[in-house]
Length: 417
Image (cartoon, rainbow, N blue to C red; front, side, top):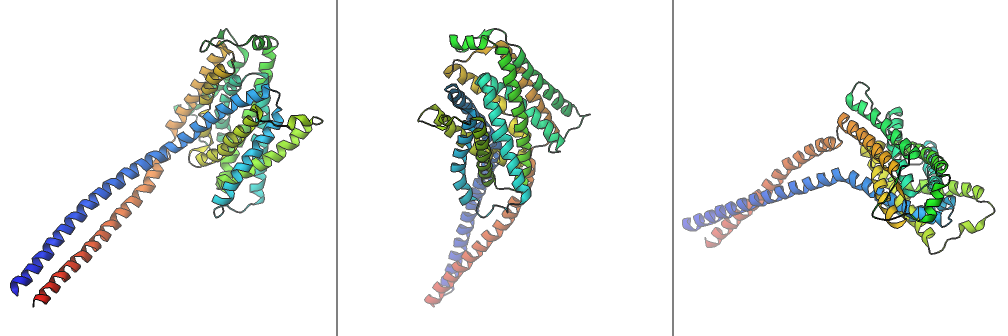
């Protein structure tokens, strides 16, 4: 009986040792896997703002090419703006209704007025002036002139105290110098032409050369003024959107409201400017329809949503700092598909704009810490808490297993007795 009882106890101890070793190795594997997943998640969270804004620039580049092609075929820029936001509202509204049903805050008069202002600034003023400026120039020139947007946004953000500025700091001085360089580069692009550069061995058409040679400077100045005013309106839109997102943190719903009221306000403007000509409203299965659908879904619906999401952590200046990428993409696509002419003066001006722009970005990155540090501090205590809780749970599991094994040994011993 004693031998059998001792055998039961020995079996229980061996079983306990096996379970303990197994659970310990399992814990090590799970812990290492959790660390890898946590590192991947943190890396993805850091990259999300960059992925979002880069995607926006590729979307804007495609819009510039398609919109210029549609305008060249006689499409009214006022009608294009209306159809663009109508398609954006049709696509984004169902997502807003379904996904943000429980998180959508109550609409107040203050928020409503901000949404109305947002619908006027970007969908109506900015886009109409931008397309008008593109009519007088080219898609590449319009995208290049739009590089003053980060500087204007930075100035407005400083005025609204969304961005800090310390005059005695060299990094803040770099921001100011970069802002001035951005404006100087835009003036170089406008006033200086220089010789034509042959990009990819593609020559502009004779018709295009004749149109540009006749009163080209006048058209360039007129188009640049319109685009600059549009940039100012867009900068106001960015700053106001950053403020509105704080009070109305439902990006999809905010996007749907902006597109809806943008369609209404843009429709009123289009009816006034295109009165008496109903043919401009007709759409066929051609470039005009493609430009309206693409620009509406990608550059209005998705763009407003991505901008609002990124602004929550990075601010409006970060969203606009990647606009030179759009210029590079448009220059390549314009030379390939639209046979646009590229002048040396515009290239020099674009280089000055990019240098000034990234001088602003350098000063901003040195002055202010990345929000990722805050995220790490928030994540670390949570991870420590989980690690403190998990051993307790594992120990409790081991205790249950031990008791059950010892109980099994006693049962076997009792049966022998």
